[in-house]
Image (cartoon, rainbow, N blue to C red):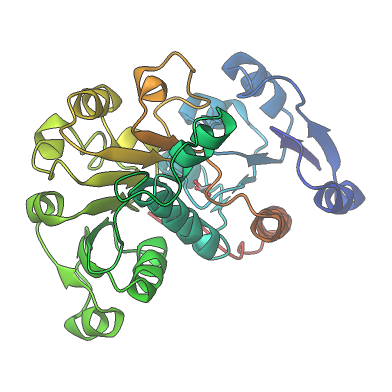
Length: 320
Ligand code: DGY
């Protein structure tokens, strides 16, 4: 059987795949151009793809021999699941293993914003450290007793709530599906409307999947409801936020700042208005980027592919 990797994976994973399949690895600039992807997928039985690859109906239909799609990510908004399902092609993904790393990154962005870490780092490097222990210099804000608003209370949202509890924050949330009262009590979170979430939180953190319902749901109207002292964090998907609106909100100081790991277009261009702002902390979609997590993701991605290609159920199969 022949498989396509739209980018290099860990050596151990490639070695494993090569024992079983004829493996083609794309090494050019990412993402792989659509035409090339469509021509390369023609004779392939399986594909391992990344969040920036658009595996749309054209690509899936071009893969006339395609029997398995394996996403090296938990998110699968880049894959046309309906088309894959209609053709009986299982789509595997990598949930659970990246929950902790992504929740950790959320806390890292939160602490960076609240304690102005990138700004302080820059100050020292630019030889601007003149005051030691001054009463007003480099002051951030406590996380203690601040309200964290979690948008999307799935695995990652819950892991963030767990971490924020350790910082003694108050936690409210809004989600497609409300948790049971028992679970809300156990985690220590309170369900509120979307409006309320944005109005009362000191920091709103996005953890929902990207769907037609969440497309640019965070717009100027919603941002205007936030307190001027509040922060926005996104480690989910860039398209959940209307970036033009966010740039306006940041520029006009409608909100205090943002911590962003994901963007509408990745890699984001350094000329993008958001990149020019001082009140933002940016990371390159590296929420799951730890040695341990990315290795586990690779293990699952190849297992999902191998299982699907042998006619068995992948460990984690995307369901509609
Ligand atoms: C995913 O797996 O969908 C994440 O966005 C990767 O960090």
